[in-house]
Length: 169
Length: 190
Image 1 (tube, rainbow over the protein chains, first blue to last red):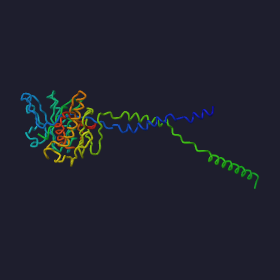
Image 2 (image 1 turned 30 degrees about the horizontal axis):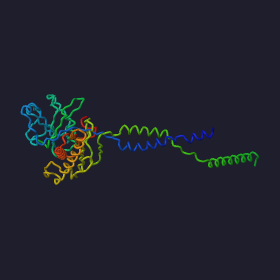
Image 3 (image 1 turned 180 degrees about the horizontal axis):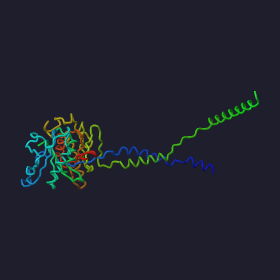
């Protein structure tokens, strides 16, 4: 009886060793494949190098919203028919001051969002936006501009369909 | 010396002797073996395993950030898709993790471009992408499907807009039509 008890006592814990080995192998494997930062995507249409001409009737009815990001701020261009009072609408982006100037040495994204909401109010069916920027504008500014132009599900989508254009027009 | 004092000394001597014997016995006893409590260890491992299983990446493409490839943050919710990955780090441009062109001060050398400094077409990138297109078209033909021309653009947050348009233009020339910018979750509109 005593020997049986001793035998059982020595056996204690042994069956867990292969499982422990397996777990020890699994942990580095899972650590390698673990994702601590989730990656997401933003859809863009290819850059417009030469804009295709639309039929004049279609062009007249469309908002044709273009947002340009420059070192000074944001510039807007729309179909002149739908121009709002705060838009400078200069023929050359560089010749006029920005419609939304930089604030504290940074682009005023909140103001951009506000102005786009104002435009969306009058053009509920519009979802397209043409986005251009100066050559030296950083990618993260472009992404942030796209985020603020897209809006969100809670407050309503603004202009999620972004087409990039080459440089500033 | 009184008989009382004598008795006390004898008692002390016996006590000291017994104490010495006890100490000796304790010294001779084999040390207790240290046993690892495997149950608590198993509990800890199970918790770690569950956490790692939960965070195990099941994305169709593997993207790893580094000092040269720090992605911007975005509030978008669209997940990653299976597509050709064009990575633009601060030092090079890669296609599916294969380096195709080096960058100098964040720009492509004019000798690598078809039309010189002002040109948009990056020759080595075009060749690499064209090769991928042919490969995917061949696979699509065998599987009775169509090549969709999708590409993921994974770019360093400080990449210039000029380089982005050059890459998109080149990819467009190589028959890519649908582009998705990749960003890390957690930024954008508050």
